[in-house]
Length: 266
Image (cartoon, rainbow, N blue to C red; front, side, top):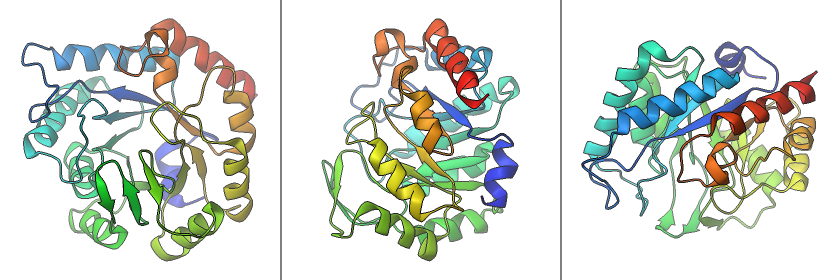
């Protein structure tokens, strides 16, 4: 495992809970009357009370998604995280969908320990052609003085299809060689949809020394099987009221999830 990954998480098989911030200024779904801070605070408190190893702030509600996110959206995320900073008691990360440079900037500005994005590859997506630049993003991180900030690379993008004809394990192994991620993430086709266990197994088999995490669709009844293969996971939708991505974190669902994680890791 990379030194940054160990330094950030400090536990085996870390489980990261999502704080899906409400639709931000600049987004068509933004509600000026919504109390974004109160909602994010409630989710953060529920995740921390349940014992999640880390949390990640994301803008999943900013649909339709963009490759270059409105500056007002990123600035508002920074403001909200800044207002919550004194309450964050676990390692935290950020993700500005689907904008690697804004993700790096937000992580650097807020003191995040890690970032998640699509940093490598070439895709046909709902948002159009997609060709992120890992070299540019990592150099930007370092220029901002945050070489300590871990970068988690999603190598099977949601809402997209890879234009690379190589099998997923080959793409993942190549990304590790060429673009030096701190961890590789394996996803389902959309938010809340599980990554196939066979994909996790195949990627982990070719990357024994690199953390491989499940990025989407981990559920209460599958987390033990996922953690038997993966080096950790990121979870959002399963923790929400009724398992609905767009609702608030349900404290009881979050607690039940982490109770199962603790049994699986025992």
